[in-house]
Image 1 (cartoon, rainbow, N blue to C red):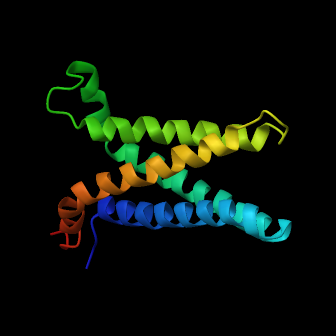
Image 2 (cartoon, rainbow, N blue to C red):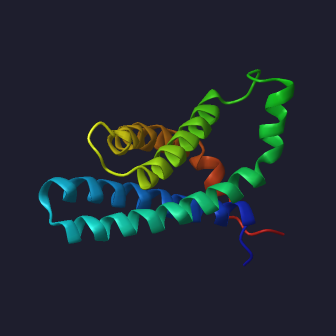
Length: 145
């Protein structure tokens, strides 16, 4: 049985989505209740999961590039506003995550907590995005002919 390439990409993206969320919460919780080494382990897991998530998300966007290009012609005719919000939140998360890695943890540097709160909001909105497309995703289980 040969699986649909988009289905496999979406399934792997879903796995990395869960891994990124779990490791993000683990990192945050361990910063309050764990030792530095526990936090460090969660941080490494979060970075690795996020690298996978960003890589597969880039492939996902590439596979849907025609949809993104069509936004130039008719920005919000029948286009999903939710998908645009998901895309913008994803960009904000990637940029804030990179800034959290680059900017040293000094007083008045709140980029990490900003990233955390946007991450929580994003998890909820990404989950809605996934659930709204679950029927289409499950069609990928059908073998290609």
